[in-house]
Length: 98
Image 1 (cartoon, one colour):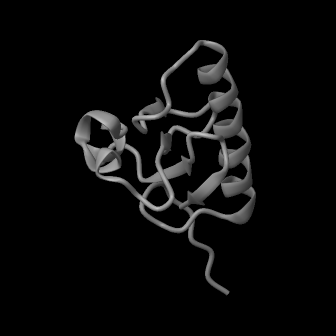
Image 2 (cartoon, helix red, strand yellow):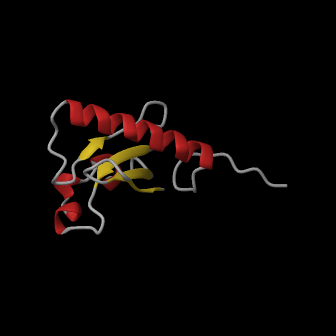
């Protein structure tokens, strides 16, 4: 049996992924409550509580050109400081988490 422990890059466990999705949903609720314009697909969390390797980005499904603009993406992910992300639609539906 081989046990791999480490940070970054690798596939997250299902438990970590589920936790990230739950935290992302909370970030979404806070962004909505604060009146954040989600139609352009902004980054709404550069870091999640207790999950420093994750960010939360709003995107469209299917993707739109606005989703690929660097200004609308999480800087920590673009810079390689975070290795995982949760993508939610502007209406708060999960697109993907990896």
